Image 1 (cartoon, helix red, strand yellow):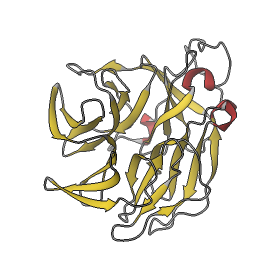
Image 2 (tube, helix red, strand yellow):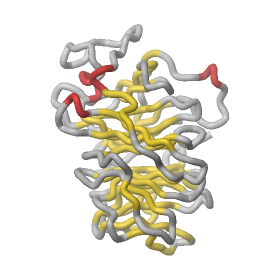
Image 3 (cartoon, helix red, strand yellow):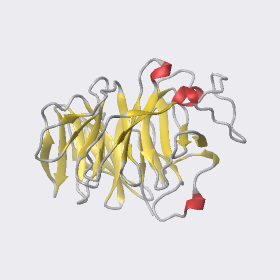
Image 4 (spheres, one colour):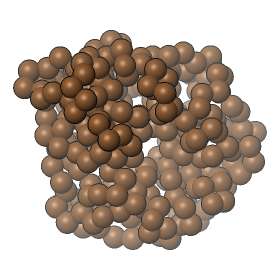
Length: 289
């Protein structure tokens, strides 16, 4: 199940391609999201599936919130300004914070700082199977990584306004969404990764304005245009399913940003659209059974 996290609204759920499903279950067409029963309103950011529950960074509430299906929401712990969430290969929770700016590992209820120097403006986070931690930086922190115990590295090229971040199924590509204000700059970039998770030079994977969602039963976008910009606007949330489809969500536009678009693994085509979501979608995560 894909969980979509709006900035200040309820949690939305979409039954998509989760672990254990077959390739012929790949999303195709137009879907409508559902509000998770009992969901509170949250000034939320990132989230991650951890120990059979969804953990949500509630920036407004200065806390981490857990959602245990079907309808239980609880406070996990208080955090000053939580932003990104992920899990590492050992099953520990990885968290990025903005005040103070740092990347931490939560292990048995105790924080271990992985990086607090040269971290930029930490935003969303993902962890390679090697243990290398990657995070985005908004507005101008670029994309960075750290191997626990080593110095922080800045990925090249340094892309502005990076937000959503995720890994391909084989973890040989890192995807990063850039929500630059200028429409022609809104793109998903990708960085090649070697088996140890070390990144190479990044490249544009796809630009939002170059994609056109041509799907049966898809209503016109608010701007009446053909481009995906009319649905997504400025990029925020990003997730990748087990088949390599890239899910992107938008925000902060009066004429767009009320959908999650599903892009084919080659970055060439919009294969599905998820409607019925709020304008600002900050985080996306897969979870459940």
